[in-house]
Image 1 (cartoon, helix red, strand yellow):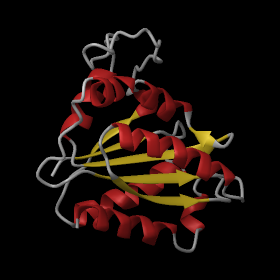
Image 2 (cartoon, rainbow, N blue to C red; image 1 turned 120 degrees about the horizontal axis):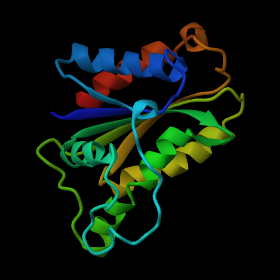
Image 3 (cartoon, rainbow, N blue to C red; image 1 turned 180 degrees about the vertical axis):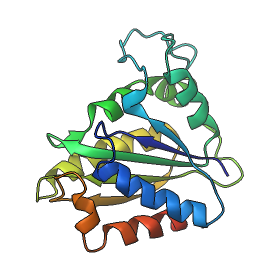
Length: 189
């Protein structure tokens, strides 16, 4: 089973990364590995809405997204982990999602969706927000839902935690780490 994770936080060892680490432990304890893409360390240009992918389903920009495209096409499980900034996903995540316009063209214009593969395709969304209400996580989830649908992930689970702002604060959350670990096991179960 191919499992990939997109880490969208720029803060090293921050709450989002800690939460993703627990998911990965759950997956690892189930006998699977995870390929992690740290989006903050990748060279990904923004989508130029140039139309270059409309006839082919292939983006004409050549940067680190080339490896992301290949990973998404072969993945059975996709994890998207992002902090919430100003009621939305991080810029690192959003730039990657916007570049998946080529998948949208391939699926909807060219009628070539990604195959569901032998295990089916499932997703997991991890969101961490400093704000105490869940407005931002709802907005972030709406964007992620469009992303998952575009890359032929018909179902995903969402774990979101609000009121978690200071670095490492997720470690003091009463259930977050346990829920993340369980979500990792469930994702591959």
